[in-house]
Amino acid sequence: MSAQSVLISPGPLHALQLYCIALCCVVRHHCGVANSSFWTGQLAGAVAEAVGLQGKGCMVYLDPIMWKYTASHASHQQRQQSAISPDKLTFKVVDVAGHRLYAVLFEPEHIKALMLSWGTPGIGLSIRGAEQLLGGIDTLTEVPFESPDAPPTPTWTPEAPSHELLRRRVVELVQHGAIDAQKTTCQPKDVFLYPSGMGAVFTAKNLLQDYRPGFVNVELGIVFHNTHDLLREESPGGWKHLRKVDQEGLDALETWLEGQRSQGSGATFVFVEYPGNPTLDTPDLPRLKQLVSYPLPPRVALALAARSCLCGQTISVLTLSLLLFVQSEKYGFVLIVDDTLGSFANVDVLAQGDLLLTSLTKSFSGRSDVLGGSIVLNPLSPHYAELSRRFTEAHRNQLFAADAEVLLSNSQDYFERTARLNENARTMAEFLHQSIGQPDSPVVNVQYPSLLPTKANYDAFMRRSTPELPTPGYGCLLTVEFDSVETARAFYDRCGFYPSPHLGGHVTIMLAYNMFMFGKDRDEAAVLRPCGIKEESVRISAGLEDAQDLLDTLQDALNAAVEAKRGSKTL
Image 1 (cartoon, rainbow, N blue to C red):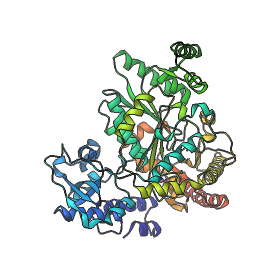
Image 2 (image 1 turned 180 degrees about the vertical axis):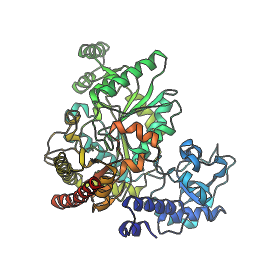
Image 3 (image 1 turned 120 degrees about the vertical axis):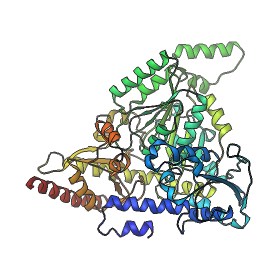
Image 4 (image 1 turned 90 degrees about the horizontal axis):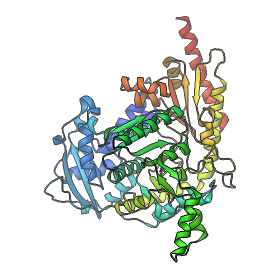
């Protein structure tokens, strides 16, 4: 049974069960555990056969760091009963079509311990990459090595003209409709591309831990579940999760930072989403930025400029203007802002952090047919010189040329799609919000940036109107909360949207996100509930359909939820 057939032939199963089955099918194919038409499955099977381990599960990567990561992931306490000892993993190296691959092989019975090890760090081979390598499968040869601790040197994958064009496209979007053009001075050399959004998170985490070793990785607010899992499991200096981004949450962060400083410690980085997923609340970025650094007073900037002139150095008007934005350190951590949900088109937040991280997989691409991620360094950051050096020296390309080409092509109608996504999401959010308080209405809350108390934080960095996007908006994602699990289930089972964990694509989709991502650990679910992560919620990502069709679909599902609520009253 294929993943596709599972999704389109529901039968009597609950919609969430269908998604789980589909996910398992995809994972089995990716690992080469079952026969599959997926290129990645075929490549993994060929590698397993070439190293004499046919029938084993197999995952292949361009980066040998995945050996260490997979061993840690598979044996981590979060795997619970599925955890396995690292000695149950076999590591092999092969060369194929000019690329060196690092394979992790295992018994298929251990798939539960490894099924997320390729998704969380986000640097597995893409389908297009696997297809390319299969074209040269006759060249596949095993590469001997003495120890997994000293693997053979990687080859990575070469860049193509599409990579530089994609970097320029990202810069164009970051600077488009900027609130203050002098604060968005990034260039293509400040843009780093990755095979997925999580690949960007994984790389940034590792690089920043080397930059500020021994400090604590801080997660602020509720973020994408893979990011949450990665930081929780892979933070050698410690992990701190401050769950709220309101003023109380930022007060708690500042108190914690001050306490850490008094002990000679601190934060490696603070990771925050703008807005959060799936709560859609928006942090106060200016206040966060003040915790990173103090603005350099204008008189100090002018004094620096005067000193340069006295020393015989010329200083341009642009350089002088940039000096006015120079920062001096306060608590010294690196502020990572993930703008995936707000998106390049809607919000202008590069200047508010040290590092802007985006999943290009989502609305940037908008076709649900390619993965990609980007990091843009802020040239006005007090960390810029060091981060630029470190990122440039460490960067090795893992984004296949075919994927870069598709990302670039898909982004050509980005503004047009963004306008439709914004409008459809807003229309659905307001429609659901209007039902709150009506007789027998099962809806008790709608989480969408324009409907939450943190709206002013979002509005503060909404981009200027431009001909390409006259009305920037609040993004494609919303979460609707029901009065009970029963009414949420009735809505979910009746609703005509496809169930999927994706967002930002061309088709409207939904997922019982909180239940699926956080429901397995009841203790964690209880802790997150006061933060808006409630089991009786459904997350919806708007697509490009006609708005009235979407409202009709919602109304039909709401009717089912109303009937479920009335039925529960008669019991």
